[in-house]
Length: 127
Length: 127
DNA sequence: CCAATATATGAATATATGTTCATATATAAT
DNA sequence: ATTATATATGAACATATATTCATATATTGG
Image 1 (tube, rainbow over the protein chains, first blue to last red):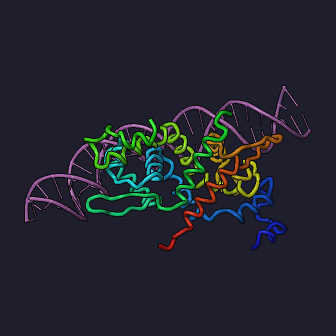
Image 2: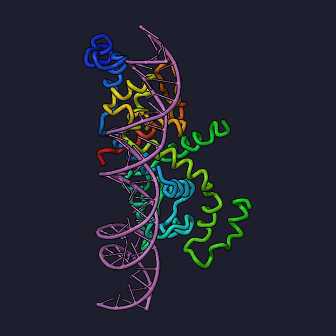
Image 3: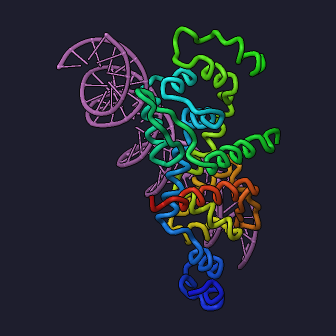
């Protein structure tokens, strides 16, 4: 059913809610659960300061695991665990070169998310 | 010390690391802890499917608390708790109108974050 | 093949988080 | 004032998460 039709023929929640039309429209337009979950999972991975630091480092240059550990001051194990999560969310990609594995950001979406996030925290900070 | 100077005079981690220059540069350019924490805190708030759903609803239209509860199927209490977190992260703003409180997205950064996040999960899904 | 190095991962533990329940606050109507 | 309605919040509990430690895998050099 189209949103336009719902706007006229919207009797699903009449007896329960204050604003049935807004509610029905919102339900019709709502994200699918699966998309909401995937989106939340992506942000959840971004939602840790050590991972944010790793991603920010990788936004400047490609780094291997031990470099990331050295810069962040984290243990190699902790870094590897976090990189695994970042890989799982397709936020970073990697290439193996001998014994070392070099990591970079997966694509420009990641850079944009970081940049917009930084804009958000900087904007209106003094309010 | 400027990044250019560090690039030449970079002896902090010589004896410890594989790629001292990259490491020193990365350290020099790294996010401040406070910024990394704020950024992570913002993404952490975005990293929950119920909150993502609420934000997505609000990206379409202003809604009051009970409407959000009705659309999401959550309890009023759970919604209020989540809205508190969203307010704390300046992701939503609100206005009181009598007994009701109407919520909207705080600014366009939030919309952009959602949009880019959705692009990210949609892009290369079949790989 | 064996030792050394770089990275990855499983298990365990300590901390953080989301929901519910009960209750508080704020506004409006009678 | 009293009652009803909309929203907010504190405490508690159950679940999720990040790090550490120990160990496994992968690659290189001898």
